[in-house]
Image 1 (cartoon, rainbow, N blue to C red):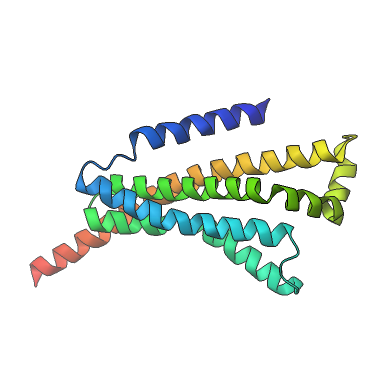
Image 2 (image 1 turned 45 degrees about the vertical axis):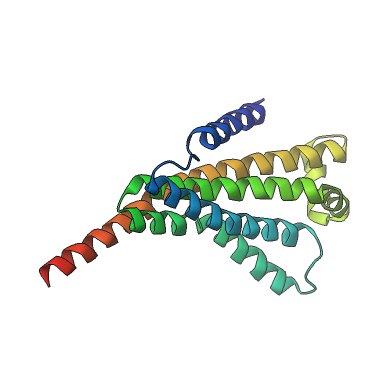
Length: 193
C-alpha cells in the first residue's frame, strides 16, 4: 500500500511539473527547459546503463562491471547539479536553476523506468538465474519468485522516480544558487576593475 501511495504521489508531481512548469514562456524558462532536457537525457542514459550493467551479463569482467555500474550510478545521481548550475549562471536566478535540476532528475527517473519496461523480459530471465536474487527471494517469505521479482522491481523503479525528484530538487537549488553566485561574483569583479 505504501508503494502504491508513493507511486501515485510521484506521478501526480511529475504530471503537475509537465503541465505547468515546462511551458516555454520567458527567456529564463526556455533556458531552464533547454538545460533540463539536454542534461536530463544524459542523466537517463547514465541510469539506463547502470540498470542494464547491473542486471544483464553485458560486460565480461566483474571489475569493469563494478566500475561501470558505480560510475553510472554516481553520474545519474549527481548530474542534476550541472544543468541547474548552468541555468542559474545564464539567468542570474536560482529559480530557473531549480527548474532545470528538477527536470533533469525527473527525466533520469522516467528513462530508467521506461528502460526497465523495454528490457523487462530480458531482465526477468536474468533475475531468475541470479544467485543474489534467488537468495533474497528465499529470505522474503513469498512463495512465488515471479511475485517477488515484480514487486522488487516496482519498488526499485518507484524509488528511482523519487530519487530523480529529490536529487533534482536539492541539487537544483544548490546548482542554481552557485550559478547565480558565480555570475554575481564575476559581475562585481568586472565592475571593480
